[in-house]
Image 1 (cartoon, one colour):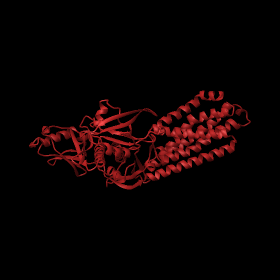
Image 2 (cartoon, helix red, strand yellow; image 1 turned 135 degrees about the vertical axis):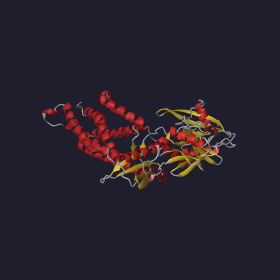
Image 3 (cartoon, rainbow, N blue to C red; image 1 turned 90 degrees about the vertical axis):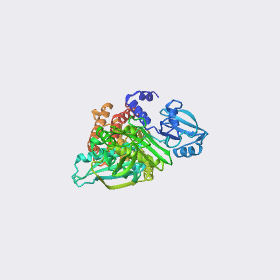
Image 4 (cartoon, rainbow, N blue to C red; image 1 turned 135 degrees about the horizontal axis):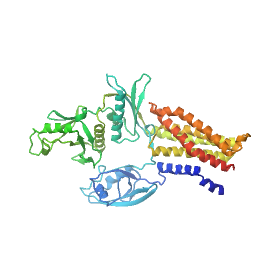
Length: 528
């Protein structure tokens, strides 16, 4: 017991334990079993949004709704289904919810809502998702999605700057759309050709194509006079409203109006575009309804997207802020249309048309099957390692310690991935598995130097034995990193995830788990 207490006071062991604790908090597995529907959007204009803004309830984005009228719910589908059944006019609705105040610590609350005709309480005012099991992000090869390889479709020679602009615009477009875990990588061929590979988890093929292939040429006309044009930087869009509180027009999520779901969001135009607007409207007349005689017609890629009436007070004004509106038959269609327009306007026009080289859709069931197989392979690998190490040393404590240290190392690496929001795909997980072999090899070197030792005088000191072991480990690490480091900057994203996780695992072992293991094994064998 005394040795154990002394061990817990050793700084190397403390560092490892702290790293494990931080990794655990970063990953945040749902060990508490909290289930329900987690709020991801709450309209500020809705009844619930007003209650939250006034401080009448702590229900907000991030809250987990656990019940409706005392009936427990465990996922988003149950929430919407029960909401549609119980949100009746002139009836009281009671929502039970939990707010996380610290990892694994929750406060419970309820909010009572009396439903009236003016009380918005549907998917237009509150959006939810299933409670996530961890904070980890997985790639499309695990959770499903679409991978598209594209290239410039132009007769002109495309240089590296055009490829770089394409990559940047596509990244901005997809990030604006709100897709998490996306990767946009440039692939260079041996013949000096360039391709762009885009991976989009949880995105279907048709939606992915609409985002990628959208040229993004956006312009507006008043009486056939072009007011602004995205292909001309001096007459383009400066800012796109992506939140309800933005100062140049705001964002209104799709809401049901006259049988269709309508949305609005503001954009800010350049000063030249505003002058064009003033010039195009100064000679228009005002009709009986208080609008100018001609609308402003918006076009995207040559197709009309909407026609908006212009208020009479804007006649001849250099207006830099206008509202973009649209509608669809369902909420999901309207939301997708709004996000597509926002992402295209925010990213701008592509510098050149692109062509699709290949497209691959991955089913989420394939990824789930792969994860199950990985768990089985890991279990089999750990069992095999334990048996081999036990046969080598004939000591259950040594084999168990090597196994536990390797598990701790993997856990810390996954925690780092959660902290930096690294997307774990199949190559990344393969890198983690490969790092197990490196971890075991290094620990065997340390164990041999501490326990076995040779008869020469330089091995009589335990410190010298450990020093020699770490010299071997350091040389091995830098040699291995020298091989893997160039792959981090490889044009093929397949190698990047593998290289990062293997280098990261080796670095975690070198700085955290190896020193702690050497101290623990030394005390177990009574030589430290």
